[in-house]
Amino acid sequence: MHKYEQFRNDVRPAMRSKLEEFKILGYGEAKEQELWTFLLNKKWKKPKDDVRLYEIVADILSVQPGEYMNFMTVEAFKLGSFVLDDEDERRELLK
Image (tube, rainbow, N blue to C red; front, side, top):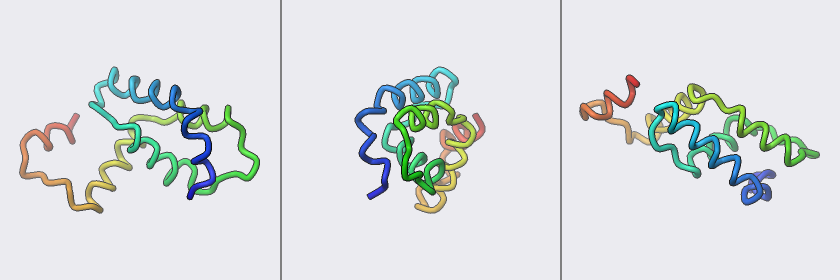
């Protein structure tokens, strides 16, 4: 288990705020679990031993839509769930 899992419930409001920001900016319906996975695997790849709650919230609020979308695209390719045969998926990729 990742060292920062203990903070997940405490930072839920920041996560919801970031997801709402993505939606307002036109990045569709991002999911909380997907954002959390991004944070664990990219932002917090090397967790700090003495991290503070405010640092975790700051990391969440600093996520840029582009870096999150790049991560999700790579993950989709890894899982083989991204098919460019679908016109809607192609349009979503080009947004």
